[in-house]
Amino acid sequence: MVEIHYGVVRLGGVWTIIGKALRFGHFRSKAAAERAARRLASLSAGLPVQLHIQDETGQLQPPLKLD
Image (cartoon, rainbow, N blue to C red; front, side, top):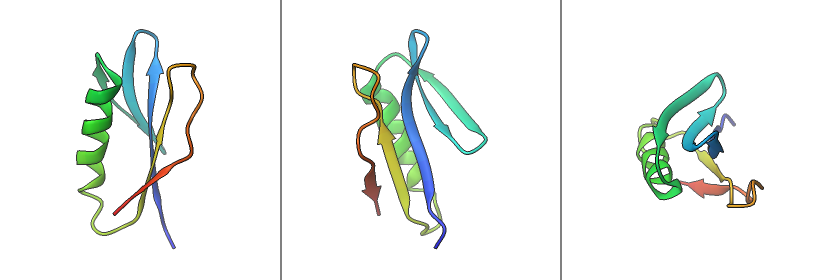
């Protein structure tokens, strides 16, 4: 089954959303980027979405499955 994967990561001094061939937005906080990624996931037309969030040390946390 097809899944969509989005990442919320810090690039330079801003947070952004990444995915396959995607880099979206410049957010001042991780929370704002995560909210935007969840809104983007809600438009997935019923496809499962895995959300990967980078922590403050730069490590990606285990993905969250969004319905």
